[in-house]
Image 1 (spheres, rainbow, N blue to C red):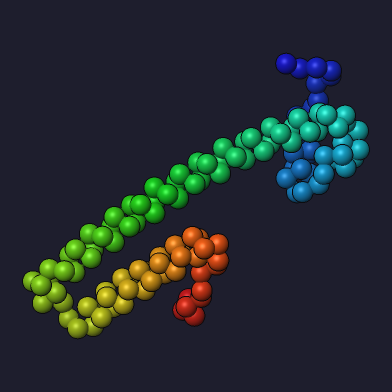
Image 2 (image 1 turned 30 degrees about the vertical axis):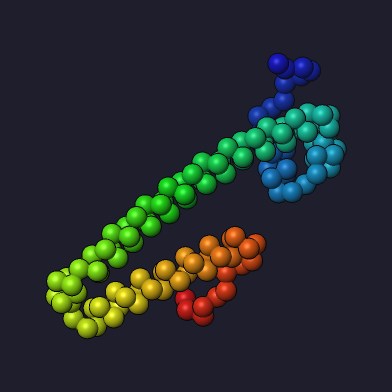
Length: 126
């Protein structure tokens, strides 16, 4: 549903880049000698595409986090097996338990921070 004259793809790309950089639609319209309505329409298209990408990324993050947590659950179950524990050296167990504990506390901090709207506290380790 095209009204008016078509615009060169490089002009539209430059306008999109300016909008992504945070410039306002009226400023961009003046800079590129375009009707403000055209720039507003392109801005709407741009936000629609970026929202789709955010949804895709959100789904990817969620599925990866679920897989990670499932893996940790299996590791914890293995660590509850007395026969497996007896086969480990003290240093191996210490490292294993330390890493699992650290990850568990970081997950709890992050979950608590996201539920309360606060940023998680930095434990000082990197």
